[in-house]
Length: 122
Image 1: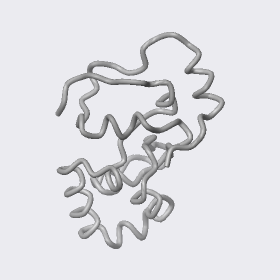
Image 2: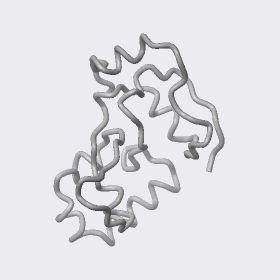
Image 3: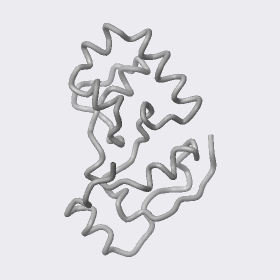
């Protein structure tokens, strides 16, 4: 459920310009659901890295849209690692079907002012 815009995203919305790059390769099926959200709907998380078995130093994370899956596992990466094979399978299936209740598209807090997107798909 979309939330109210943050002060940061409201300020960015007032600025002219294009947010994003054509070089970003994303699954286009995740774009429209992402545009319905605001910066307050994002979270800095490491669960995608955990699922992909990428062991970045602790200070690195990514900003992604919140969803049921990351709401469940964010802050419990140890628990996620204990159930990793089953959760990897669930997540990979969601990647293949672009299920955004599990797959959490990486977006910035400036998602709020974005009204449309076009680009290349994966």
